[in-house]
Structures are given as structure tokens and as C-alpha cells.
Length: 393
Image (cartoon, rainbow, N blue to C red; front, side):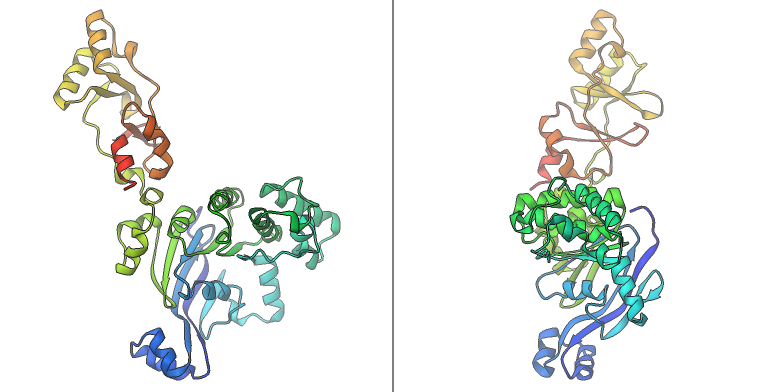
């Protein structure tokens, strides 16, 4: 996410289905629940008083169980569902006030949707599906071909331009759907559980593909899912919904550390914590530190005082140089060598903001605790193999 400019503002949006909406609203304001209101009035409260502020360039994930209102909400963003009350602003403009021409322009140029069931046309090949939106907009054939081929390549389907849709796997079909949505160059990409029909391995591939595309194109993505691990993996921020209401909006890390209530905590407890927690939350301050100019004898004393068998070697401004072991320090002291003569430079490092899951492979093989360094190479802390692996429990 590159800036904090608001792109979509949702203000007190409610969506009710049924005839006696006024009675349902009255009962809701009295504090009665969704099921009770339906029994009394026959009205379903799909959304209630939803307010959100979605930033330009962020991936905003909306998560909830079936019936929580997440799909209803995302369809309000392009007015496939028209709110019963409340407003939605896009770049400061109330989309509810758009006339037919403005709404068509908004849907064609500013916002695109990727569906769970792909929504592809079986009588068109891959290229024909991807360029369809450009064709509707009247883009010349050569230009739309070029753009469509570019998007097909971006989603990893180069060489499949003329394949029939029926010959593609589920993952490939979803790639076509994403390419078609991106071909119009929208500012906002709406994705309603796009990967839920895919098998787990393909799903992981598509999650990675989406993150890669996001980095390349810097689109604003609103992603719907019922999978907390998926939400935490791809979301800059996550909103949890229940019974048509927003329970909490936070970054995955903030939500993991401070769930708003027991309902959110239940979601969090089912998540893979290594997908959420950053290195900075579990790293510790290294006590055994020596400078490159120090003597091997000083390094021996430092390790002895801290009850460890290695020390981290730094230079000016705490910039990490490597590690010296007790065996090498003793040898250097005996042979009249300096620390620089015996230092081990090949040391595993990571950054404070790295997610724990990304360093698990490193942690299983590292000889020393992993050094945590900032962008200047300064040592900020260390994290042991035990700390990383125990976080998975």
C-alpha cells in the first residue's frame, strides 16, 4: 500500500430484503437480533449500519461465515446491490447518485469483478474472453488484442490464448477471469471468494499470483473470503463481519494481537499464527555482542558472562558483520589472531517486519539464532529456531 488516500467510503450502509422494512428497522434499533427480526417481520437484514474507509492501493479483505453479509456488501460497491440506506463514495462521488451513463462508465472503467464460478463464455477462447470487456467498450481490435495478450501473459497463461475454455483446469479458468477483469485497467478489483472452488495447492498458487499482480499493478483489491488464513495472507487490512455488521477492522497483526471480542478471537484461534505475527513481535535483544575491533579475549569473556557459545560481531552504528564462536575466539586468542580473522560472515538474517512463516525454512537449518537487521544492516535483535518453531503451535 503506497499511500493513505481514501478511495471508497462506506457510510452507514444497510441492506434489507422484505416488505415491512420500517418495522424491521424499528425492531433492530431496539436491539433484537437478525433471526428474531426475520421471524417477526419476514425481513432479512443483510447489512446493518456498515461504515468503512478503503484506501487507494490496499488489499482490503472482508471475512465472515456464510450469511454474514460479505458478498452482499461487495455487490454494493458496484451497485449490483443497491443499499436500502446509507451512501458509498468513490473518489468523493456518491455512486448512488450516478445516472445510467455515469454508472455504466463507473462499472466499465473504474471497477471490475472476479466471481467464484469464473463466469467465462464457453463459446470464446481464452483471448476472446479476456478481451470481451474491451470489445464492449469499442476498443479497436488490434489494440484490444495487444492488451488482452499482455494480461494473459501477466497471469501466466502465455501460449494458451486460443485454447477453448472447456480444456482449462479450475485454476487456469480463474486466471482467465482475473486477466479479463484487469484488461479494462480498473482502479478497483472486486473478488468474491475467487479461489474457494479450487483445490488447496492451486489455491495457494493463486494467492501468490494475486500478490505478485498486486505488486506489479498497484490496484485496489477488495477480496471476500471465509478463510482466515487466506485473509491474513493477502490482506493489508481485514474486516470481520457477523450478521450483516462489521465487528472489527484492523491489520492482520493488530487483529491477532487485539481481537475485538470473543467472536473475532474464535476466528483468530483457527488461524496459522505464523501467517500473522512479525519477527519484531518475538525477537529478543542479543546480550552477547562484540565489536570488530575488540580482542578475542574480550569476546571469550562476553560469551562466558552470558552463558552462550557465540557472539554477534558489529561495527560502527551496530552494523552486523557476522558471528564469532567460542572455539574460534579461543583459537584466535591462542594464535594471536584478530576477530576479523575468524569471523563467520555467512549468517542468516531477516528484517523486523518479516512474517514468521517466511523464515521457517531458514529456522530449521540455521546454526545460530537468526539476526534481525534493519535496512541499514544494523542489528536490532535475534530470533532463535525454538522461538520460530514454537510459534507454530
